[in-house]
Amino acid sequence: MRPTGLFTHADCLRHEMGAGHPECPDRLVAIEKRLRAAHFGDRLLWRESNPASLTDVELAHDRFHVAALRGLTEVLREEIDAGGPTHTPVDPDTTLNIHTWDAALAAAGAALDATDAVIAGEMSRAFCAVRPPGHHATREKAMGFCFFNNVAIAARYALDRHGLERVAIVDFDVHHGNGTEDIVAGDDRILMCGFYQHPFYPVGGSRSNAANLINMPVPAYTSGMDIRELIDVMWLPRLERFRPQMLFISAGFDAHRDDDLGQLGLVEADYAWITHRLVDIADRHAHGRVVSCLEGGYNLNALARSVEAHVAALAGA
Image: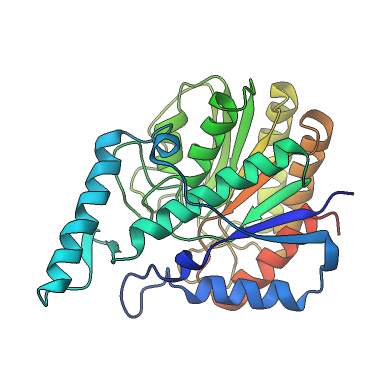
């Protein structure tokens, strides 16, 4: 069996949003320590990503959004040189520092490099240990800790650059992937499946009734077994009928029962189960091709354990 790729970049550690912010560089440190200690051996191939080109980022984002983030970075640089603040807010929860632009391009680039490698057959599947996350970034707006939508960019890249006809996006973060929905709703080349705690951030949950969206809003304290049942009934039959040629995963681990940013009840075994089901779909319809990108997950121990379970399932362990 071909190895599973692990894509990351040092720039992803340099982006930070201030002391005490839950979306912090320590998330990637905890993941790397756990995966290095797991002794995957030659089943896991580590790669440093290349930054995404702006042309590829604009497959999913309005060019004015991209230009605005670049402009904010330049203004911040000038303010720092003049002794001003080190961060610029883009919404109440989200700020950029002088390294955010490079980190966001590196994160998107990891998703694109992973897509290239998996489609080329160099590796069977891939996980991108990157930040900032992406699934709240809409076509025109950064929000919810997210600047560029890594998974949406990669999905459009697989379709528009590699010529695939159908891809699926699966989002198991505790929060609704509103940015991904904004970008892909109505695009019948993409089937998006997601569950999320509701009511919760972002306010209102899904805002589209597009036929290519399979949304599963669930109340607080829903257990992992209940989530599995819903996936069996709602996701898997649609994915089977859709026959995606590649799967992309927005892999948020903040639905873990130990994560204080959400109130769902998943554990590591649930993430492994979900991943195995998605790999089964990929094996039947997509030559096994899966690219997964880190989204949420803020309890460092639960995050690291859950990523290990997810990567092990991707790698066939």
